Image (cartoon, helix red, strand yellow):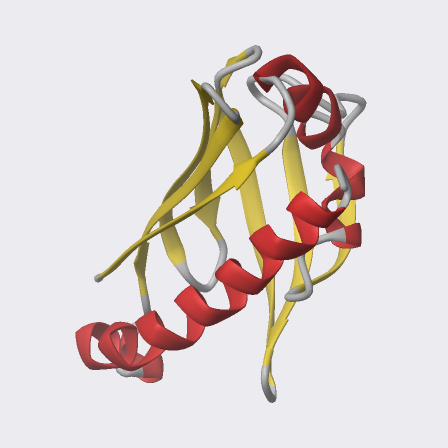
Length: 143
């Protein structure tokens, strides 16, 4: 299991940051590892929304099935990963004197044929690097 937590300060209030990240279809604009998002059903936001996200990290590609399990405007979005890699993730928006601390937390499990716990151990620093870069891209949207 890989437990990953990255964060960045964004110089805008939480509601402004929320208004951007709540548009799930735009995540491909700042998440370099998310190549496309397709929604299952009519929901495009809120608890119960299901997305099929084509994800690419280096030479590895997978379709990540993501179900929104918590939607708390303007403070948190929590998801369940139900694809090849399983686990839970959460975006948390914390007000700060300078704006918003955007925190991205994930607990992910790799299947045995991707190395299981060893694969997760190897993947953790790579995913941390990718997601830190993603957060810089997110913050740049508010520059």
